[in-house]
Image (cartoon, rainbow, N blue to C red; front, side, top):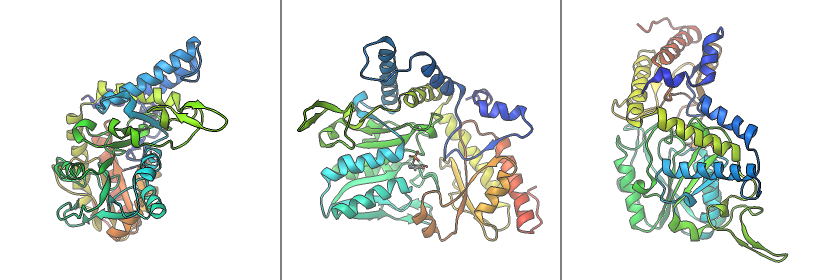
Amino acid sequence: MNIKALRDQFPIFTRARTSAHSFVYLDNAATTQKPRCVIDSISDFYSTSNANVHRGLYHAAEQATILYEASRAAVAQFINAEKASEIVFTKGATEAINLVANSWGKSQLKAGDVILLSQVEHHANLLPWLELARDKRLTIRYIPYDQTTKKLTIINLDLTDVKLLAVQHTSNVLGNVWDHDFANLIALIRAINHIGGAVLLDAAQSIAHLPIDVQDLDVDFLTFSGHKMYGPTGIGVLYAKSIRHDELQPYQVGGSMIYHVSYQAATWAAMPHLLEAGTPPISSAIGLHAAIDFMQKNISFSALAIHETMLCQQLITGLKKMPGMHLATTEEQSAHQHVVSFYHDAIHAHDFASFLGEQNIAVRAGNHCAQPLIDLLGVPALVRISVAAYTTTHDIDAALSALAAAINHLGSIQFSLS
Ligand code: PLP
């Protein structure tokens, strides 16, 4: 993997190089930057073939439909779905998870059924289930997070009455919370498969970092956002396995998702149109296709794991030298990581983030849409640095120097990294 050649494809970095301030972007878990091919694909679509999909009988409309459906096929191939009809385009991972809760959970779960979540979920994979549980009198059970091992504990889990397992593949706060090769996640999925439960895997954080094969994982639902994998905002994906299609009810009703409508009633179209009411995010879907092509041409997942783990280790080594600094994420060399979260005894996370922000170094601070986890950790907030394929050792050095300067400046502590 040629990091320099890959990075050169991102206008935001090449522009920054020629301006007075370089841009050190370390907030990739929030969203990734976009390569030129993704930006161009959207502009080309609007310049050459803009039209609505699945309706017009003129050339541009046919071309728009071809491009939109080609994106669906590319997504299916990217995650090894069996059929393109298993891919539903949504606004993002949040909408995809809400869609499962409303389209599948409302009709398939009944009072007393158990949903198994983990203690480290993003609000997007917590709140839809809390709402559904309240409406339908379901029980939520949590896989405990062990703060010593910094892993989820799956031994002795009570699986009685579990009808749905809904968990993150990797955490936006802690990275890999399963074991190194995800064997315990797979074991848990198999156990749920065995008792006839459904599995939803929230791949929002893993989709740009790990190869995903939905047939191999054997999940019923998989959700992710295009904007965290070098694609545009406004597009996400719900993978829904074919055998679940008969269990899905429309989430929204309107144009495009019907078979027949009268003044009294309607019948619905088959998947994936059943869950795509109204005009879909056509240009964003086309941009997502370009992002998948970009990843397939430029990124090898095995080389990426080595690159990102190396960057995280560089960061962890530097952070450990800083007085008063504590790591929330694992220090394990072998764990695949793309995020490192930390806090300081005396300096608030937001103060670090704004100190770095003044130097055009983008990191994130706060509760990271995981308030229950932050409460569990007993910290007011965390600083999070997250890397991507284009992140360099220079970026990490810049962040470490700025963090050291922040401690000297804000904490009135004198120390040096070397
Ligand atoms: N799940 C996880 C693990 C996330 O990190 C995020 C966003 O950060 C989401 C779900 C929601 O993604 P989006 O905001 O793109 O809908």
